[in-house]
Length: 121
Image (cartoon, rainbow, N blue to C red; front, side, top):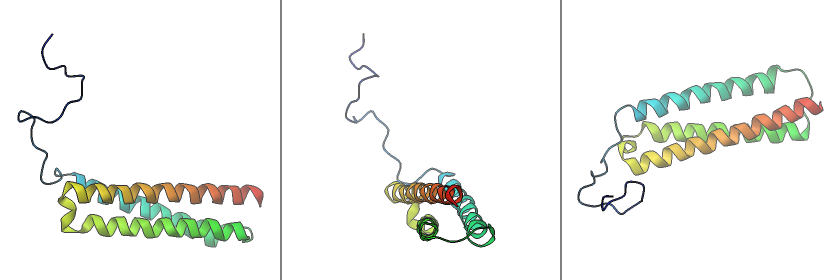
């Protein structure tokens, strides 16, 4: 058995490659595409559910719409962050990804609330 077990986590040594100073090419275009696709879905869903779907608005419909609107704002914030030049730095990029993940989670909650609204109404 060698001195260094590959299954054991260890501190970085001088032999380990340094972390990159910039995000690898392809990451930023990928996150920008993901954000814009999800933003398009969110806006289309809000348009249909809020304006074209049959039924009456109730107080919990407003709560669902507000949650989805908050998600759209978070997605726009993530898109704005991803288009900045500083987003090539890994630390800044990680924050942008977190914004997007939170926006997706909030939209899922909003869609689930809308589904309960449709089931109750």
